[in-house]
Image (tube, rainbow, N blue to C red; front, side):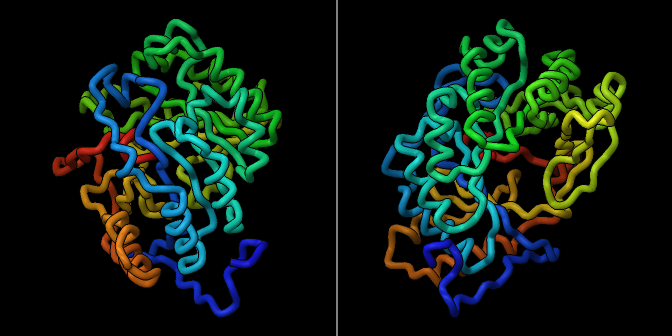
Length: 338
């Protein structure tokens, strides 16, 4: 790569296209399966078996995969995920390596440590953050996450804004009978803070497989509840997972990710790399490609490129949640990376 992050002269960029014509430009990298929360819809309180450290990809291995995605396939964005990515030691070092590739580098985090770390990530080249926040009530936060840390997350939101890691987005997993009574409160919080709240339908990616369709609050219902208080109008949608609405009074935007009730598989442009190096073409895939074995062998960049292309070539048309034939993947969200 050049110092500016552009491919060397002569590098041939071939778009990464699957069998349905979808061009992939977004790489999600899980840097760890560990987390400092224990959200009830994601992880059990005890008993998680963490990956041995020698099975987790090194920064150099992650950088190599990312470089090939950018140089060979023209990827435009990289998102760091987990588990909780900020529990990975020396993460700003990896951020700097990836930012040098000349693409947008963002991160999804629970925000617990951002009050002290946000500026370090910004200085390393991180573009923006998505912060998970499912409730504004301390007692409910404790019940949902099994940790009394709401104040730390709220401080992290403010720190991210102050560090320029914007647009800062808040990810809210909305569950019926759990936090759906806070929809308007959370949207108003976003308006007041100048951040975009994105409501996410609860997906079948929980560790204990307790997900049920009845607990899903549809994106359409969420937006209707907000619009009744703060009038909205829709914005044009591209390949982003969120459908976005703007407030009529100009005070920002709000989004809904309706993966269950209104799948957007037809425009999906994402691939995911797990912490131990398994490449997944879909969040709900049952098939993976082991890149770690190639990374830790004499395999060439061409070998890795071919493996990545073959994985994406076999991507299915959609996840089929709601179909009789749907089977929840054996990995939970914390083991895949969002």
